[in-house]
Length: 154
Image (tube, rainbow, N blue to C red):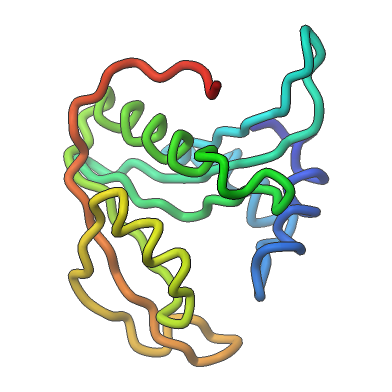
């Protein structure tokens, strides 16, 4: 991810999140030493087309903290988010991370099911985590497995 990708990412954010991140949030992640930010672009032949998915996570000692993952609605349900999360976990493992944590809205049952399908387990709640609604967050955790290299989405 680069600063030049942020406009495309913001458009996806607006489509998929009730309280999307703003430009400054993504710029801060790009400038943060512990942050890792990846994108997926649609590829047609040799041409790279617009951003269709992205992820931001931080590495803290031996922990990966997933901050944001999003997929353009036109490309959802194709395994892109699963691939992107697994790829990020692989990268985190290579840098010494053994576990990944994330928060998700209790009302976001689709996301919870997605994460549980990938092996995440609920470990707690954060009361009133989302200030705009006062909604609680469910905290999920997963051990990071050693995985084979996954360099391309097919």
